[in-house]
Image 1 (cartoon, rainbow, N blue to C red):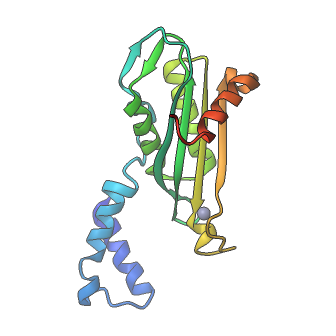
Image 2: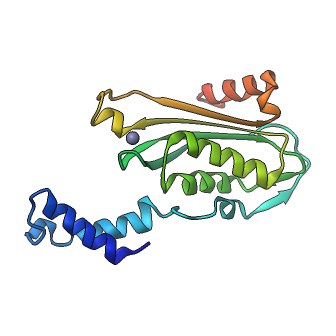
Length: 189
Ligand code: ZN
C-alpha cells in the first residue's frame, strides 16, 4: 500500500469537503488515517488467505469442529463503510485439522480488505476446503452494514446472514441441521 499517496488523498478529501486540513484538529488526520487503513482496516488487502492456515495437524477426529461467534470488522466495497458482526466456521475433518486460532485468523484476513459479505463468506469456505480437504465446510456470517444503517434505508439493527456450504454439507441436511442448531444454541453448557 502506498501510504504517502493515501495521506495526500486524505488531505485532498478534507479540502474537497471544505475543511482546512491545517487547522489544529485536522493537522495529523491524513497521517493517522493513512496509517489506520494500512496497518488495521485494510491489512488483509492483497494477502493470500491460505497463509492464515499455516498450522495443519494430522488427526483422526472425524466429528464437527465449530468455531463460533468470531467477531469481525470489514469494509464494504460499494460504500467504503464498515460492516461487522460474527462468523461461525465449521468443518468435518478428513485426517487433517487446523489450529483453532487459525480459523479466527482466516476470518480476520478475509475481513480486513475491501469486500462484500457474500464474497467474504465464500472465500473463507473455499480456503478452508482447499487447504484441509475435509468432508465438508460450513460458514455463516451475520453482520450489520453501516451502508444500511447510517445511510440509504437507515435500518439500524438489520442483520444480514450469508451461508456457504462445501463438501457433504451441500446435500447432507442432517449435518447442516447439526451445524445450525449448534450456532443457534448460544450457551454450550
Ligand atoms: Zn455497502
